[in-house]
Image (tube, rainbow, N blue to C red; front, side, top):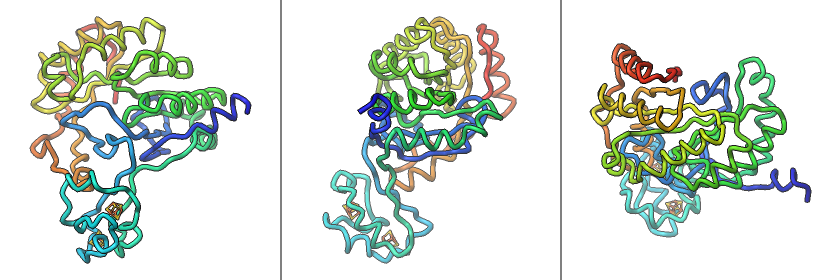
Length: 306
Ligand code: SF4
Ligand code: SF4
């Protein structure tokens, strides 16, 4: 098998592809969402990305409450409109309930594909990428949780002249980022807080390994834009943003994007029958965002629009 054939054959798990993304790097992007994430952010806006396996999503508005899903379930789970999050551990993703549902209220989130298929889809969009300065973005979830798959997609796309961006939370082994950097044009690197204790509490992960990886990536010569999700009442005060910008700068970053809070995630929690953790949170106003961007600029960083 040639190297290219081996790369094409790499298999991995996605939960979505968006061929018209505009906020995941420069120009028009094909955003490829890899399933599985090592963090447990309390504000997660993609809860369907977390589990490294397929999951059934339930759409309340389409559910007729007929109970056909329960009748079809080999695990004898309750109908989806009554299911609790703890039932999920017993679901074996057999798809029986999806087949049985008369209302299209159920869908399997997560499917296997090959790096070759992803790269072929990106190649078809090359004229649009060329016109807009865009390309492919590997995001998730956390792309480095599927290192061989992510490297294969990036290498195949790079080989065809497609610009490759990778969005990472940085909570991964250095050798995985190092490998991926060989085939990546731009990293969108999440930095979620500058306070180590609060970072641990809100994401379940230590901050230090993430900033170590950021430093190493920049020292290695990678092009990096740091991205900071602004969570209302959590770390979106002027003092918090100043501390995050200073930390990013001290790691060697020169560009930073502030991401205003996105309340659209609440519906996804309903798909997975989980309570939404931030029902009161609202996006920052345009004026507040401008002020916070001024603080980032004062720290000596270039502000990049989301
Ligand atoms: S996917 Fe299978 S095991 Fe899971 S709830 Fe549906 S029928 Fe039951
Ligand atoms: S089979 Fe479909 S429509 Fe009927 S209760 Fe289950 S999810 Fe709802």
